[in-house]
Image (cartoon, rainbow, N blue to C red; front, top):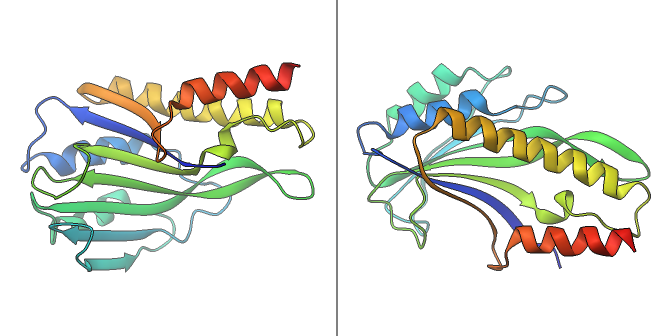
Length: 190
């Protein structure tokens, strides 16, 4: 069963005053879709997930990160989460393999936002099946490896540019993604 896949960061020195600067570093490293760069939405929510967004703003194409951050700054505070819903290019299987713009959500959590996790920055990659080999699909191991390489390259760039205290790659079921990946690779090799 597919789960949502996340990459989360806790950062040293993260505060309400510098949270958008850390978020900017993440956004500048992220490989936004070149195939379909449009459809980016900025969302800022306050206090908790139960509250409606303070702002939900479609952004013009191509994405101007400075403009997005300026818009977020008008609403963001220590009790807010700032999210950019965008796309990046991954291999997807329909009738054949195709490099496809795939939805992703890049989030920055204010220190006082009510959340079950204590993340500062988080990327929601969508379903983990995109990154796991599936033996029933032709050439899936190779394409899943390509998607995993994209994810690992992004994580390495973020590691170099952020003041990382802790990071984790996890799924919403709580299962260890690295173990699931190892199991899937072993099953594909048989």
